[in-house]
Image 1 (cartoon, rainbow, N blue to C red):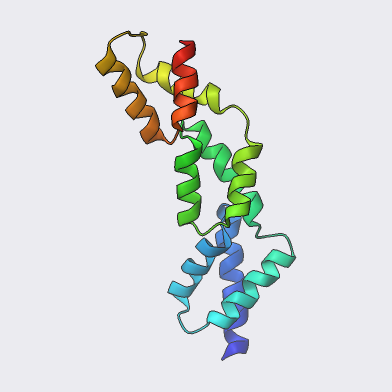
Image 2: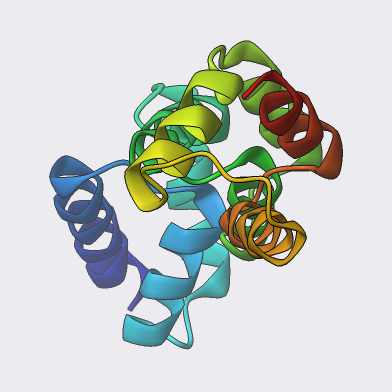
Length: 148
């Protein structure tokens, strides 16, 4: 049975990663749903893909950070999403630190949502909450709002 299942798992893995990058944990979950009794074979397949550089959590994290940052999300939110995708904390922190331009993204999101600057305390708090929900830290928000 294992001899029959191994190529199926490998081909399904290749099929999934050919469509988009996946983290190891994400791919494991997809494969285990399809082949629930083949945990050992799935791990061997994932190791083989890792060895052949077809599956790389660091590369996945880097690409994910860039894609989500382009959509206006901040480092805290992206970090949480990557943790849910079972990416290691080292890969997450490396990818977030390597990305430059958080302030520019924060500024862009602020200008896109709120066209005019304001001095109203309630409005400022509303803007801070919006940016915080997007995943930016309090320090990042304060530094950008202080400059505007």
